[in-house]
Length: 567
Image (cartoon, rainbow, N blue to C red; front, top):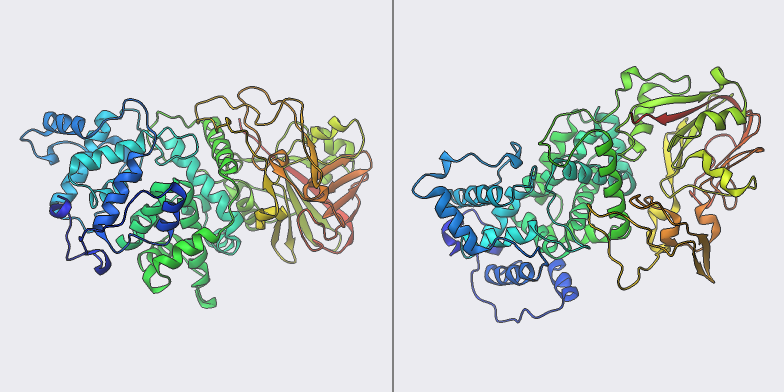
């Protein structure tokens, strides 16, 4: 039994009850999720062990998935009478930490044996730093090593199109870190602002998000996370890490905002989480965060994988050290300082910050011509617009789509772009204003999939999720034309055709005509610049729910457009 693996003297008091529980485990998946979130089996070791076994055995897996019998055979052949120390740990660990989670020396040895066998039987795993923690936690609730191995194997071999558990390559792991960074920018703006202002490499901080959960949190918190993770997959880990990041910022006093080591500060916060919130409160706050649908997060994850692949990261490579952040020391703008651009840069989606910025257009070099602005920016997606007024105020916008899109309307004024667009002010106040539904996703509804429709696996070609050449229509919602996308091309993250929006003003992201450019609409325009790139206006608009970004009517002193070079 698992007793030989667990150091019961180190275990939290609540989990020291190995007594049986008479309650039936025949609940539906929805009921089990509710029980897991409420900590229903948190105080009963035996009940949790039985529940884990039921949940994991119902996870759909590849047809040939190694089980307990295979483990016994392979372990006998690999180890025999040799000690585990004579076998190197799998390369996929990449030197990551080996959390012990109240295990005895026998337990730690069992974890190493299971990891070595996983490396032997799953040769396609090239990088997976989460596996040691998952193995160590599940060993607490397994009858022996063989059962623990079988349970972990089912998580690795899961082929459910809606749920994923374990990233198995450096490419997938980095994409998940980038996805968390994107979500943190949207859901934890105050924490993100602190990190961006005190850390030279924001991505490096966010790359430790899984370590916060399965490396730094105490056992009784980590195991509550595992309860919901087994039922809901990786998306729930994003929720937990976002809740932790929010709480870390809330716990800081005004005198602590000048941190010099934000990574170390976050680590210490996680390790001392009991001083700040209970495990129940952590889960409650995690599930109160309004994330977009699983489909939208999947699209973001796939977009990040694609950007990494363009950067040269492959599925088969081992971990490599490369600098993902742009070197702002070599950045030069006539409008913003390097420090200001670092903050603006920290707001843009992670997949674009992989690539160095390139100045596409500047009024000081290209003149005050709207047509020249268009010709310089066409072919680049996305772009960052920076404006300095004659009063010294600075504002701008991140624009997700190619300005070429304006031509599809035949010269008439129409809006295009996606929900990743945002507007911002730099001086006198630095603030970002995102699509209104980022803050309130409950106000919009995802376009329903047909019963047979499934999210494709990362390796599958991606087809349009909407009828070719059709329309998504509702008497109370915006009607959006849908076009057949090229085979194998991802649908954009936060594309408006994925949502049933309450009004047209909800998606007025960007528009360009011969008369000028407009960013944001509905009740006003977040930014309007005339055809001479000289006069401008800024107002509150419904798309971004922003205040005026500077003096409402202004004259342009300088205007720059920046793109991203991915070659």
